[in-house]
Image (cartoon, rainbow, N blue to C red; front, side, top):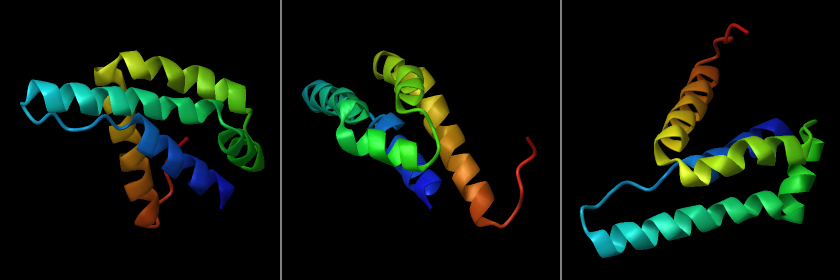
Amino acid sequence: MWAKALMLALCDIVKPPALTGTKEKDTRNHVEWQNGFSYLDSRDFREVASLAGFEPSAIADRIRPLANDRKAAARMAKDFYADRNHQKKGKIKDA
């Protein structure tokens, strides 16, 4: 259960907002998205990661650089959602 909660939180953090074509709105959305990465420093994140059986600092260290790399973040979010959808269908993903 905690692993799923952690995965959902990471999906929400990592997925960059869609571009609207309006520079002002896109800039604001991008700043808000980058600010979302501050959740990785929160007590709640550390608790959820620990309860899921992961080292919070290791996860944060891997995820935090994505705040400056929109393309890599979009790829990781796509992978997160693909994994989630794959699991929902009851199939086991090969390791």
